[in-house]
Image 1 (cartoon, rainbow, N blue to C red):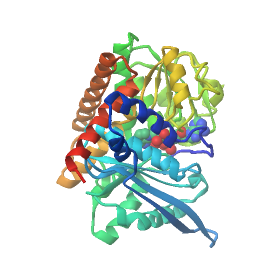
Image 2: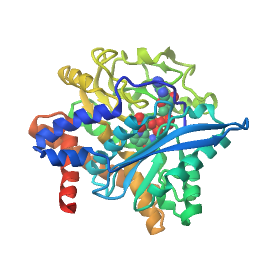
Image 3: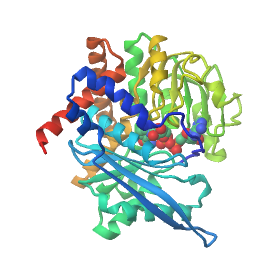
Length: 420
Ligand code: NAD
C-alpha cells in the first residue's frame, strides 16, 4: 500500500462506464431489456464499520461491496481504501470488473468494494481492526464460489491476509475467498507484479501495431504504487526509458531515463519518489505536459479531462493503467487528436488474470512456479489485445468501444443462456 490522497475525481467511475457502455451496446444492437440486465447491479451492500481506535475512541466508517454481474461465474474485484470511496465509485468500478473478466474470458463476474478512509492516517492495528470488521459485515456475501475480493488502491497483501483470516474463522480455512494474498498464505507467485507486467505487455503489443520502436521508447507514469512501480521495473527491463514519475507527494523527471532500480530503493526508505536525486522535480500538473511515447495514469480515476489536460497531452499513446482515468469528453478529444488510448479494462487486466490463476491454484491445492504464471499471463493478455485490435480495425471504432463490444457480447450471451 502506498499513499492515497484526498481527491475527488471530476467525474465518477459510474458515469464514465455508463457512457462508454452505451456506445458499445449501440454497436451490438442490444435490446432495451438486455441493456437493463447488464447495467443493473446484482447486489449492493453498504455497511457501518465501527473501529476501536488506538486512542480508545470508536470511529465509524462506511464500507460498500457491489456485485455487479455474476452471469459468467463468481464475482471478482478489489477492495479500495480511499477517502473518495462512495457507492457510485464502487458501482462503476464493479461494472468495469464485469467487462474486464469477460474481455479476458475468465470464469468470473464483476465486483468491487471499498471503505471511505484515509488509510495513511491509521496505525497497522487500526487498519487490521477496520479490515476485520469490514470483512465481518460483508462476509455473508463473500465466498470462493460467490464473491472473491483482491487488493486495490490503499490495500495490499496484508489486507487480504486479514480478510482471509477473518472469513476463515467463520467458515473454515478458505484460501480461495481472496486473491492477492501473501505467498506464504496461498498467494500466487507473480501476482504482486502482475498488473504492471500486464500493462507492459499491452504497451509492447501496441508499440508494434502503431509503429513505435519499442526499445528506447519513452514513458511517463502517474502513481508509483503497486501498478506504477512494477510497470516501471518491467518497462526498464525491456529497454523502455521511464522519463517521469509522480505520486501523491510530487514527482521527478530525467529526459535520459530514470534509474528505476535506484528509484525503487529510494522509495523503500522515503515512501515517495519526490526528491529522488539525479532527476528534476516535477509536479503532477507538469507531468501531463511531458513529451513521451506513452503517458500512463496509474493512480486515481477521472484525471484525464477536457478542462485540465486532454488538449495538452504530448504523447502518442495514453495507457490506462488506472481504472476509469479518462472522462468521455476527454476520450473524444484524444480520438480527434489521433492519440491511441489503451483502455483500462484491457491494459490493467493482468492483476485479475493472475488472481484467477491464484484462485485455481487454491482450489486445486497446488502451486505454479513463476515462469508458468508469467507464461499464462502473457498468453491471456496477448490474446485479448489481438481480439480487441482486430475488431477495432474491422469496425473502424476505438479500442475502447471494441473491448466493450467483446465483453458485453460475452456477458449478454451468458445472461441469455441462464434465462431468468
Ligand atoms: P496503490 O495504492 O498501490 O498506489 C497508488 C499510487 O498513486 C501511489 O503511488 C500514490 O501515491 C499515487 N497517488 C494517489 N493519489 C494521487 C494523486 N492525487 N496524484 C498522483 N498520484 C497519486 O494503488 P495501485 O494498486 O497501484 O492502483 C493504482 C490504480 O490502478 C488504481 O486506479 C487501481 O484501481 C488500478 N488497478 C490496480 C490493480 C492492482 O492489481 N493493484 C489492478 C487493476 C487496476
